Length: 325
Image: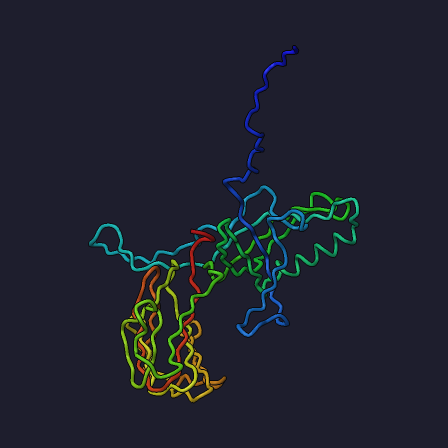
């Protein structure tokens, strides 16, 4: 009788899981302004190039990238001959100058000198205009996006080689962000409205919703600024609202009456400071006028006193010193 050697059957082979890197890089996106693409919210930015993708033909090589860290600060101080040292009176954030190294590449075998010339010209028409800023977006691996609005600040470039013959060139442009802050890609929007007569307060599971009833007021509503810079609200009063006063962070503004179907837009940013009722300037009817910003990282009370069944929308964009963090 034949004797066969014993066989041992092991655990079936399991291939290793695909490698997922723990660290991924930032995305850098350049957008140009195109008024033909402007939407109802005034957004006409068109994403044009991804500077983190070499396949796009314009990208950051392994070189320094300026502009993502802290902007320049100017410390306002005072001193006295009778006292040692100095006293800090305040800090002003200055314009943000910075530079890039950016590579323009059209050096593949199928490319031509004419293709390089046209591509190079298209890039400089966006990033090289000292009067029309472009938008630089930095996206983190977690998906957070912030925008910086950038203008070309001039500067010559010495060509050490002929880019038309090579099909590529490294530029080192200098830029400035006149507004030095990075803007969150997602505005903060809160609304308080009264579509129909109902209890003044929503149930406990809807703390963020404040209903405005006849001659209603409340100090329980709140709004939070997650940014690193004080925020100024853009307020919209819609539909039928009368005898309106709005208090944010202790400041009070009064508005003209708003009829059914009308929209009052109030921008409390001191750089703008405007009020339009259906496109008509009503600045002189904003009494009282004492708007206050929302301090960085703070939650402040919102008080609305009004008659009518309209509603109020508050919007602002958090601002930061850095492209992330």
